[in-house]
Image (cartoon, rainbow, N blue to C red; front, side):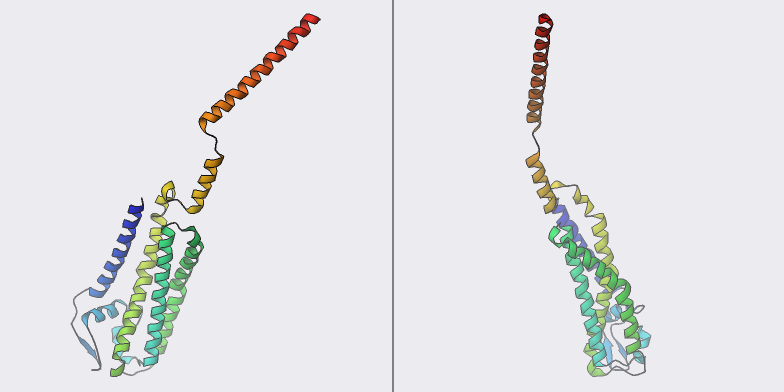
Length: 237
């Protein structure tokens, strides 16, 4: 069963890489594109941005957004925090799959926080970035080219993690982990201790039979003794 669990975790990791590759490749696109003759994107970067355009900033809005280094750095920092947050949730979910009872409370807490980030923090962050970056007209300075690329890549990666990894984590938790609950070999430490205590207090079947036979013998002997006493009493009368 331990080998099966490791195999399923490996398949989970491979699935996440496949999802990210599909996000990066997608449909064929021009190799290079330019915005205001200042920033150029490769096909891979272009595809990443295009996949996130419904939730981040559409490509047509890039020329109308005033990107400054501070704004882009804030965007990249938010994305890095989101990525780290999702990875922590994945780590604790894997610990939960491996049945580590000492970490179970942390697993549940991080799961709730990840869902909270998905449902609350993420949309709020998107609206803030839309307002801050696309509030006025401007162009992308050439010295901010590398910052723009890194910010979009990080932001899109965190968006992909929140979109795909979090539901995948909880599907694994709901549908794979219960298959191991009934297996005593991979049960939790607490369960093993309970089973050990139960084994120590459980009387073997043969001992129970001997104990029952002894009780029956004593009861029969007591009954015979009472019969003898009653017989002598009747004779004396």
